[in-house]
Image (tube, rainbow, N blue to C red; front, side, top):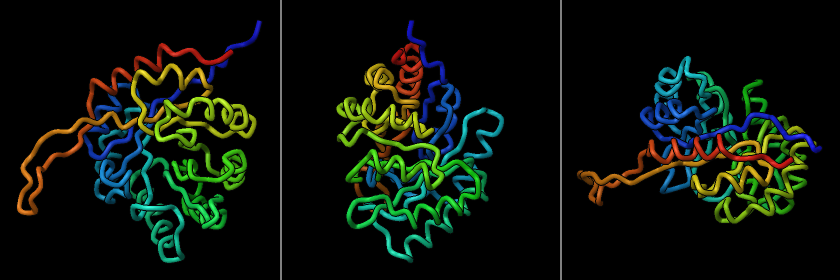
Length: 251
């Protein structure tokens, strides 16, 4: 009889504030990814003050605080000045209490920027490093997995190259054994809904990442606009946690 993989599955929730972090922790999330401007940009580096407040709020909960370090929207090819900012931000968020960082950089040809990643991993100084969805833009994701591992990153966040991870299940299933052989944690993310979790786990991923957001109305203030903003929905987080607990990994 084939053995069943008993490695614990992890739930990671992308959040933008203390309230969202606490919701994730109460539902048993292994980690949060803390960022800012998630809906508008896909996520940017949050302030050091927010990192410190979230780290303090989650102290003792068992939920790790991992912080996105991304200096601007757009592509993932960075010049020397932008890389220097990210190196400084990695150090700053870890000094503020983060447990790990989420980074990524590519060359103009779509390969992992090894020099940039080496600098970011060195700045993390032993803290956990996740390579974010820049991975999905890489031309050769099998090679990218090897490069990420060689640089010292612990996991990759990927949709399998699809617009949403639910549509990327075949590629995730292809990558899963490569990642396992390399000792890289494969985390499915990108448009994930609780109903996608079973298929993602069956593909062989080690973790599932989602933002679990809902939109609330608000006053636009002096700048105008409708004032709507995203908040973490506790019902969606709870549903994702339940789906993960019920999911069956491949034999």
